[in-house]
Image 1 (cartoon, one colour):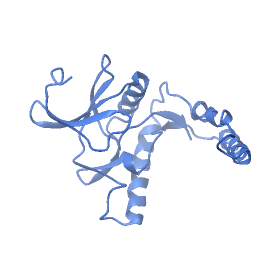
Image 2: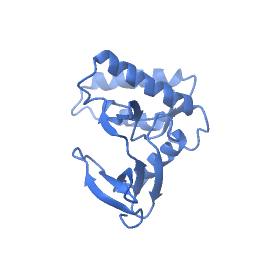
Image 3: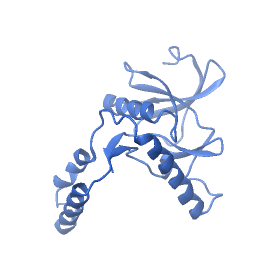
Image 4: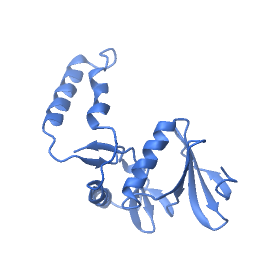
Length: 185
């Protein structure tokens, strides 16, 4: 991948979790991120979602390598997460989060494509065992899920994993990373 994309100065990020993610420079100038997954479907879904949002409220995608389940992404600079931002108040974090949601929702209306539906994701609740979670909580979750799904009015493409670590600073503007791409309200 380093040769394929002409990458140099490859440095893994410190907070690796499920995927391998590293900062790099492309053609010795442009800052980029390389993301490699052991799960082909996750990378394909993320690629599709990134193409859908097309850099609007979300990081841009430059390329995909299907053979190695890898994405080449734009690098946000400085790239600090909203969660780690200590110099802003809780209200400023709420405003930043809301702005990202609004920006993503403007792009969400166009071309819904072939994405999984939220009801598919929520089937997991129906299969939850009461060994570790009290059965009355599972029953409550199922009731709420069914009520919410029966009242859906306006379905759009959602990020699918929008939390404070998936919102990062890019040139004084907060943007989303790591979208899943899912249809929901």
